Image (tube, rainbow, N blue to C red; front, side):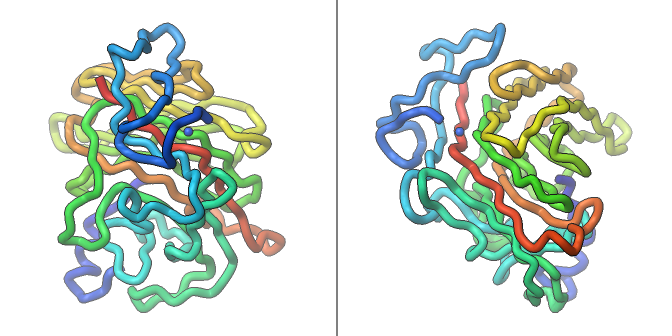
Length: 284
C-alpha cells in the first residue's frame, strides 16, 4: 500500500488536503487481557517471551476512536491515497463495529473530497495514527509480532490491506503484512526499503491459491531488527533477512479497503465489505 508523499506535500502546499481469542475487554494495551501468546510455527511463544502491548477485539457497538483514526494523517473531512490513484474517498461513516467485528464498507457513491475532486466510491479504513497532520500518533511500534483476523471481500476491484507505515509519513520503508492485488486467491507480503544509494527496493512474497473470502484468516508478521517473517494462519509463508532490508523506525498500524487498484470494479459491483475480528500487537 505504497504512499507517495511527494505528491501529498505538493497538494498540501497548494491548500488541498487531501485477531479469535477471548479477553476481558474490547480492546486496549494488554491490561486485563487473557489472550494467549502468538502462535508461530517453530518459534518460541511462551508468556515470558511475549507481551501484549496493543489489541482490539471489536466487542462493542462503535469504534474506539481513542485507539483508531479513520483516515491517514492528512485527514481533513476524509482522505485518500492519491499515490495509488485509488477510486475511494475514506469516510468515518464507512467504518462500523458490531456483532464482534469491525466492518469496512466500500460503496459505489459519488463523493466529493475535501481536495475538491469527486470520487466514485466511499470506503473505510482505520489507523493508529493521527487525526490531523500536526497531531501525535495514537500508537507507534518498532519491532514485534503483528496479527489480525480478517475476512476479505470477494468482489473484483477491491484492494484490501493490513500494513505498517512510518510515523514520519515518508515511505519507504513500508511493511505490507497482507495485500490482495488483482486476485482474492493469493495474498501478497511485501517490504519496501531504500538501499545504500537511496534507491527504493522491494522484496515480495505471495501465498496461495486459497479461497480467502470464504472465511476469516489470520495474517501475521514477526518484525525483528534483522529479519521479517510472514505467517498465514500460524504457518510461516515468507521470510526476508538482512538488517539493511528491515525498517528500524516507529510505525503505525493500518487496515484499509481501497478501491480501484489496479482496475476499477466492474459495473455489476456496487458494494463490498471487509471484516476484521481482531487486531493484536505483541512485543518481547
